[in-house]
Image (tube, rainbow, N blue to C red):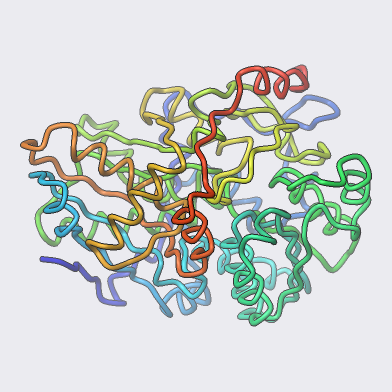
Length: 446
């Protein structure tokens, strides 16, 4: 069977919260001033209480509000597809399945959490949301969701992606959002960084600082984050929950589950519903793949750190390259973040998740092969997951293992990146050890 579908009535009506099932737990966020655990009341000026309750919940199952389900039904349940033509091209006996999140209005998995976040903000009387975006996928998703619930939306888009991806800006404008390149002149931190580093390509850490400053400066505005935090991972669990149901329909179960890792939302989204099986003794491997140019999990430090450059966020216990880290302008903009979700970080700590890093050029080669065999052009971020799936399927061509990966987004708005790849303008980049060492010198002392 090529494509495994669920009926609308089979879409999950609850999200799965993996936090209570992580062995040895997750360290709490800390107040950067007192270094004490931070309660929801201190975060309430940038997040609505409905999301903060989810952020700190110890409940394994949380109901998906009916209003959220109605919007999700525009594209969910998303298809599970067997990449049998890719299997043939590789000459492997492995079975490769991918969960196709490119069917969402914004073209990526990000819309799953954007809809939920817009709903909870609307429910609590918020009029406007501010956010950052790297590749533009999260910004597009929140622009769509905010419009659905009648909210204004302002997006601070990392400068290098702002220049690389003009049609992401067009998409956000179409949904009614305002977009500025980050660092911008619209915030104090943006102006400061532009003055000190006038030629900077920007970073997610800078854009987050700007979006938080924006939200803190207006009573009608809250901040939305597209990855890293626990409530985002919760919303993305719908990916794995659907995939699990779809595989059950055809009597399959994955030997390997793969996701690309930037902040952690899509990898955790497809992996988390399988974690309980793993903890109960099921033989299953989880592989998280990241860029060699932004090697948070494979070369970062496990420590408390800020999520942004201006040090406005709580301290999160996570793998980090340091909040001062400015990654190179690779074309997988959604994977250029210095930190990693505390949930995924804890999975690496417990040796549940195996992190690997891959180079930019091999990922674009994998994306081209996938497009030529399966017909769908993947986003540069998704190319990392495809590359990892190819590596898994090629280790032993006679191994009939079942591989599941999250196809987190299509690449139809990333064709300029492919143009540069074909022109020979893209290069591999190993981040120098010296730069990583310097970036972690300023980690907060806890």
